Length: 309
Length: 249
Ligand SMILES: Cc1cc2nc3c(=O)[nH]c(=O)nc-3n(C[C@H](O)[C@H](O)[C@H](O)COP(=O)(O)OP(=O)(O)OC[C@H]3O[C@@H](n4cnc5c(N)ncnc54)[C@H](O)[C@@H]3O)c2cc1C
Ligand SMILES: Nc1ncnc2c1ncn2[C@@H]1O[C@H](COP(=O)(O)O)[C@@H](O)[C@H]1O
Image (cartoon, rainbow over all chains, first blue to last red):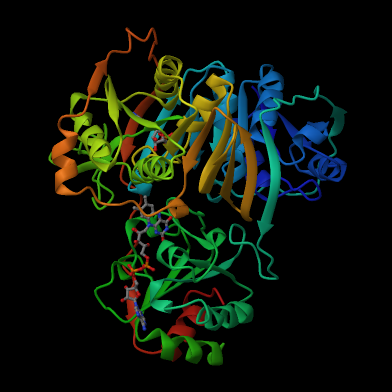
C-alpha cells in the first residue's frame, strides 16, 4: 500500500486536520507520502516532514496552487496520484472542493468522509445526516477518500524526519481566478480542533446576545459555534455553522444554548463526549442527546453560568 | 444563456430514517420523498437569473427512478422550462451520475450548470465537482452569491474560514450552499401549468454511459446510541456535574 495524503494548509502553517488524515492513512497501513501544494509554502513542507509516520513529503510550490484553485490542484494530484493505492484528503471545505475532481480525472469513485477504516478497501461513513453508518468496500484501482477529522485521533506533529522532494509541473487550467476572501478573525480556538464548544441558536435572538456566549467561551477556552437558524438570521457568520452541512465537531464538551436539536444540527455534534443543553422548552429534542440538560431561560442561565465559572 | 439544473429525489429532510432490520439499507418504504433542499436552492437561483434577464432557458435534469418525475414537475412548477429524466436505479454512484449529466451537458450545451452542494441522503458532496472535471469546466462550489457578467461568473463561496470569491470562465459549474437564496413555493396555477411542460425520458444506454460502480455497500447500521442523560435543576448543579462528575471543565 502506498498512500498519498494531501496536506491542508494556508501556505504558512500545516492545518491540524492533516494529522487526523495521516492517522487514517496509518489505519490503512503502508508507506505514507504527504503532498504540500501551494505557493511559498516551504515552511508547511518542513512541518509535514516532522509529522510522525510520514516517509516522504512532496512539495509543489507554484503560484498556480497558491489559492488551492481546484481546477489547477486537481490536475496535479491526479498526475501524482497515479503512483498510489490511496489518496487521502481532509474533509475540509477545501478538500471537498478538489477531491471529487481528482477522482473524476482518475475515473474512480470517491468515498466521502470516512470515520473508520475496517481494512485497506473497507471503510465506514455516515449517511442520512449520521442517522445511519454505512460500511462500504471499494474495488477502485486508486481509492480517493475524504477523511472526517473527528473519526481519527491525530498523529503526533513531531517525531518524523521525512525527506522533502520537489515535484510537479505547474498545472494551470486557466479557467478560474481567485478574487478575494473574507476570513473570520478570532482569538478563540478553531471550531474543528476545540476541546470545548459553546453554540447558540435561534433562541439567542440576535448577534449582540452572542456576546454572552463569547464571555462563557473565553472563561472556558472554548470555540463558539451556531445553528443554521442563527447563521441564516445573520446573528453570526457562516463559518460558525455546526451540522450536517456545516462543521462537524466532537469536543470534550459541547454546550448547546437556545438550539432545538434538529437532526441536521445533531449530525454535527452528537459525537461530542459530554453534551449540555440549555433550553426553555423541556420537550426540545436536544435534550434527548444531552448528558446534562438545564430547562431554563438562557438569558438568566448563561450570565449566571458565566459568573460561576 | 441556457442553464441546466440538476435535481435529486431524496428522502424529505424532516424524516428521521431508520435502518432496516437486516442491515442492508435504510428503510424507505412509505417515507415522504422530496426534492433535495440544495437542489431547490439551485432551481431558485436559475429562476432568479431568468427573471433578471441573464438566462433564457432553464432545463431541469434528474437521474433516478420513474418517480423522480415528481421532483422534475416541481422544478417545472418553480419556473424551469423543460425537464429531462435519465431513468436509472437510485443506487448510482456520484461518478456515474456525473457521467450521465456530462452526456446531457454535451447535448444541451448550457453555459451554466447549477447543482446542490450535497444530497442529504448520501451526503456525498461530489457530483458537481466531478461533472466540472469531466467537462473541463471551472467550478464554484458552496455558493452564497452568483453574479454573471459577460463570459464570466463571479461566485462567493462559503469556506471553513469564512468567504472566498472566485471568477470563473463560462461555461461553468456552480453548487449551492444554504445562504444563496430562499426558495419560493410553487403556486397552484404554476403547478397546473407544469403538467403541460415538456419532460423527456432518456436511458443511460442512449447516452452511451456505463453506470458500473466500484463501491459496494456491505452493511448499514444505526449509529451508537447515546446513553440517557439527566436534567439538572440549577446552574450550580450543572457546574458541579461538569467539574466533579464529567470532569470536563
Ligand atoms: C438541507 C438542510 C441542511 C441543514 N443543515 C443544518 C446544519 O448544518 N446545521 C444546523 O444547525 N441546522 C441545519 N439545518 C436546519 C435545521 O433543520 C434546523 O432548522 C436548525 O438547526 C434550527 O436551528 P435552531 O435550533 O437554532 O432554531 P429553532 O429550531 O427555532 O430552535 C430554537 C430553540 O431555542 C429555544 N429558545 C428560544 N428562546 C429561548 C430562551 N430565551 N431560553 C432558552 N431557550 C430558548 C427554543 O425553545 C427552541 O428549542 C439544515 C436544514 C436543511 C433543510
Ligand atoms: N440522481 C441525481 N440526479 C440529478 N442530480 C443529482 C443526482 N445526484 C446528485 N445530483 C446533483 O448533485 C448534487 C450533489 O449530490 P451529491 O454529490 O450526491 O451529494 C445534488 O444536489 C444534485 O444537484
